Length: 472
Image (cartoon, rainbow, N blue to C red; front, side, top):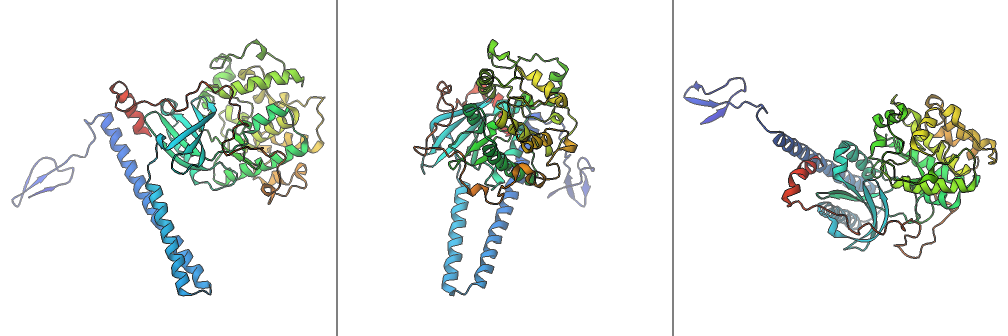
């Protein structure tokens, strides 16, 4: 008979005819790969049992809640039993759905509708149900290189857990050797950036509608104790009824070097070439945007689309405190809203320049660089709200909550409780459930319909991707 002794005993010893085998619980001598796999197994087991326990509690809570509700109703026992049995069937169906393992083969690509620096967005149809979704792909190798693993998971969880009408809904997520896949609701109206490029400027009434809905959307994110940090027109999507939802919580174009504070600092120090990493936009990018000339604005808007696709992205809407590495809170999102409101009314963001380097400098020196052109006439209320949002964080409207912004005179007459139920100023004219006419897809023809995946059994890449698979 053998028993394990204490780790401090060491060796074999006699004790009443029994031998003790002592195990030294040290990780010395194990390879890094072995330690990584053991850590991954530990996290997976902990997560599995936590999710299982939470699900069991939720099922029990729903059962108890229905039983209490039925006790108060004056209905027969037979009807009560039918409702309880119906709940049981729904719970079983839901558990079967959760156990379903999805893969790329379960979705048929209809069309590529967008791209970011590290992946694409495709309109897809689920093979068994025919339902339409937007499928976003993220290259795992890029996420791994950028050390964004925890960030990806945290933001994926926000999307999965949110049930807000102001946040794009995430239905499924899965992965293969090459990509992370996010299956999200498809919003057929495109995004606010496309609308701004098309219409140049909005009236104050139209601006009031979109900015008011953005206030409610950002408030919903903040109530989840989350900071978006990347509020911009590209990430404000339009649903079939013309109302907005927030998307891209750093999951699409957010994972690139412009989200690295060291990169910002190098830009501010002037040590990074302003054109490095940019798509070549041609000499026409060297324009002066202090005047609201229509042709110059049109040139900037044309370049804006290309910049949205690049690995650099656009810094036009990012608050200065993020660049300066001085710490920031939820108030940084309200700065971004002020920059978007300026663009809606003026035609371009307040600090846009011919290159990112100059844009960063203008944002840091915002006190001297915030300029309202003479040929654009804004109401005093509109200009005041912009100035109250594009200002120092300790003075910024919204730092104590969205209610500070809601009571501003610019929003006089806005019904905050029912704004999502009123008719939007622009309602997409859709011909089918797969209509993509509000997406600029003319430059996306060369992107393959299916993501280019890497086979796991390819011996040349297996070693490289085993570590990445483990991380995810």
